[in-house]
Every structure is written in C-alpha cells, then in structure tokens.
Length: 408
Image 1 (cartoon, helix red, strand yellow):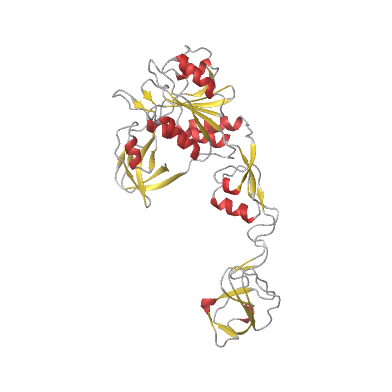
Image 2 (image 1 turned 30 degrees about the vertical axis):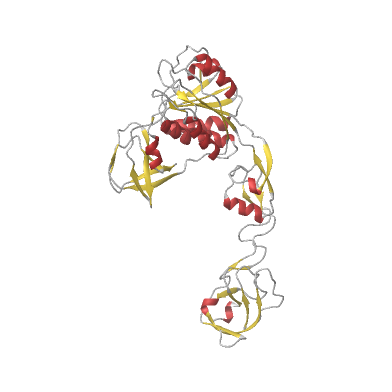
C-alpha cells in the first residue's frame, strides 16, 4: 500500500496487469479478516444471501432404499422370467411384506424398495401375461434403478458450507433438511458517489454540455446484484472540498465506490481527497481497456474503489474488480470471475499490451463483436450480452477461434 499524506503529494504507483490487480483486491480484502454481522432470514428471503453457518443433513438422504423408476421391485436372480405380483407400493407408502423367490411388487418412483428385492425393472421393459403376473426379458445387476439409503448425503454431513451464496438449488436443500430459517451474513452497505461538474440528477433535463447521472444507478444495480445494499450519495462537484465532504460520509459504509475524477486532468481530485482522508493506495492504474485509471485502496478500515467515469469503464471495472471485494465483504469464501469460452464468428484484432473487455453478442456458443464507439457507448453495451476478454499478449483472433467471454 502506498500512503499519500498530503492532498498535493504525487506518488507514482506501478501499473498492474489485469491478473495482478485482481489478485491484489482478493488478497487485501481477505487479509483484512473482516467478520460480517450475522442475521436470520426465512427461506423466502434467503436467495442471494450468503450462508453464515453450514447446512448439514438432518438424516440420511434418501432415508431408505428408494426406487428411481416406475416398474417392479424384484430379485435380480429371478430375471429374466415371469414373476407373481404380490402387491403395490407408491411414494409415501411402505410395503410391509417380503419379496421372495419368483415374486415382484409393483413400485412407483420415489417409493421405498420392499424387503427382499434388490433391483427395479422399468415398467417399459415388462409385460403383464395376467393381472397377477409380470414378465421381463431383462438381465439386471443388483442395485439397478435403486438409490441406496444415504447415497446422496449421510446424516450430519455438511452439504452447504458457510460462505455459500444461496441459489435455487440451495433453497431446495435447505427446505429438504428442515431449515425454515437460516443464518446469513448481513449485506454490506456500499456508498456510491458520482463525481463531475457536468453531471445532473436523473430527473433533470440536461443542457447540451451536461449528462444525467447514469453511473450511480448502474453501479447501484450491480451492487444489488452482487449482494450489497447500495446507498447513492449526492453528486460530488469537481472541487477538493466538495469531494472530501462526501468521501467522509462514504467512508461510514462497508465499501466506498466513486466514479470519475481519477484520471490525470486538472479537476480530477478524487485521489487527493482520498489522501486527505488518510487513504493508502494499492494501485491507481491497471493495464486494461476500458478502465485503465482505476484506483483501489483503504481508508480508516474501509476499502474504496475510484472507478473511471466513462459509463462502460465504470461497469467493467466494477464487475471484474469491485464485485470481488464486495463478495468477500459479504462473507463469500472466494470471489470468482465466471469466464466462459465462445467461438468467434469473424476475425478479431486488437492492439496487444492491454487486456480488453469489448461488447459482444453471444448465442449458442458463438461470439460476435458488437460495433461500439468507445467506453461512453452505453447503447452498444445494451445491444450486447457479454464482453469479449482479449488477451494482452495476443493481438489476432481468427474466425472459429475460442475466446474467453464474461456475460454481463
């Protein structure tokens, strides 16, 4: 971390690669060993939250040998052949008899396998010579079409670890195991400050030289999607004093995000204002595009990011850097970047030296670059559903080549 003790002090922080910067964010936030507050929520409110305690199996799953097919429970040594049907068992019932030599029990999916049977013949592979017999030509090994007791999870086994972000599959498991309420980490409060004299509130009609405050609201949407509680603060005008006042308020949150004011312009005062608040800086430039002038640091125990002000730059840098910090502050054990691979539909060229995140339309495993006019072109991003992630060491991609993609 590089300290900046006075607002007018200029300290050069080396430019980091994309991988170095992301590793720095994860290392520093994890090293801080922050412990989010824990609260209890019901299942209806648990989706997207992060588990604070592990969720274990309250009994064996399944709690009995369970049929996974509709058919007939039989002894594997009795087939192929014709068997006498001695009863029926449905899900939610128990057959209290015993399957002996030459016998079968009609069984439905989900029902307990009767004593004596060791496999289930699918109904599609059977015929009914009479109402009391069943015939099959199948050879089956013991255990066929049976989910054995405890094969999914053993009683007391942890299936969901603390730090898991809860999705619909996890909700199913929690409901299955009787967790009507769960302990989760509190959502981090994230203060958001847009900076710039040219910015007006979203409900205002801007003059020709002004723009509406879109960044604060796009960041708020990304924060909410990532599991945080966004708090949009007033716009910071391009003076050191105005920016300092809002930074003081923003540092009361768990994470502070600023957009704009981090380049090398005369009125880019965010870093000076942060320095006046006692901030230390881990980096202030990353070899990516869009988003090179990206600031990451910590002041009075609160991590902060100074995101670049162009809208696409703001969105990209949040997604690949600030989101990782937010997830870790929310209690997630790890912060992953969910990259996939797609095949390019046409050749692609970029200038090597920077990792680039460029809008693309991804359909059925193929990626088509979307024409755009740079990091202020939000309309192009709306026409895309992903970013191409172009390697800093590779300038040329041919049609059919695979390239990493990040869905937005």
